[in-house]
Image (tube, rainbow, N blue to C red; front, side, top):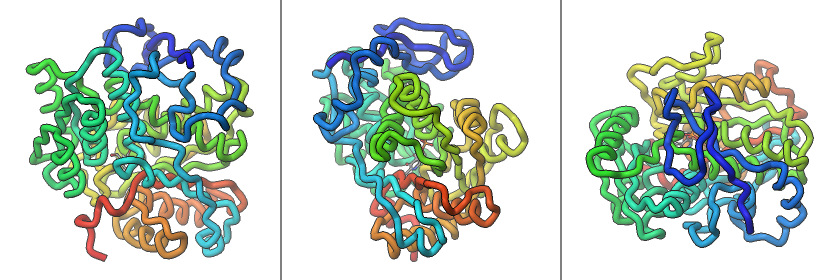
Length: 390
Ligand SMILES: Cc1ncc(COP(=O)(O)O)c(C=O)c1O
């Protein structure tokens, strides 16, 4: 198979970069780099009908993935997670078309597997073998596991109150784990210093171009699973926002490939009322988000006080006619139990936040009950059992 990845492009100043050097962010403006593909060639040579014969993982979209040589793929079988119709929840909310994209089925128990499979694979391809990152929890576990699989070295910096499962899986997979008395933003500073001092490649969220490419496959899968139609609404629990912007990037790519009609999906960002920098920025009409002071929520994956991709998240929400809203930790706890008892899916608190958000959006009539709605359950509750008492 041939990947049509061609060059990197700054999402802010549009400066372009070659595809052989390990760039992280834009040298001129420091903003996020995206992988760009030769869409004209892909359009001719990558027929979506071939997919039914392909591997049942996110790597089935290889032509639109960032790895040039298949031999460099470091995989644990990530992706192609179920898109489950949720009729019992639908009945209780008077909606007929609620679906849950169950990312808890991924290796390492969360959607972080997608981004880290892509980033670790590309690092291997570029000859980088020592990787570092700050993590709220799940990404650190995934980096550690994919580095173990790829015979690479992982350095993870995590808040000391991150879920125990994330700490233990990182250590057991052989990573160098450092626990920090602070938030992911504090861990980020230490990871960057460590990268400079010890010659490590920092794979922090959106500070290298490849994790977003793994996460975008959620968008490809949703379209494929809906028979090449995009849904009316996607509700996404937003921390660094890689998944939300990745799905939006995928929809745009598939439109350019001629695989789908122009997407009309409203991209909805949900955050915790204890840490909501993107919601505040969206409501104030700003194109960037201020750092959120004293971030607090037990949903560790969305306890992210500042996001380097803030402008991309806000752009995707606005371009798609979506919105942004907060929910409380208490609502998330209730919704974990509601999803588990109605549908047998045991969601991470972040995934449960999407149901809490849906209830608000139905009440305020921002979403209409007839719409096709996807709740992104980004992880598995088993990884958080020490974080709340039912
Ligand atoms: C379970 C879970 N959901 C959501 C998020 C937020 O993801 P993103 O950075 O794509 O916004 C995270 C990040 O750690 C997470 O672990």
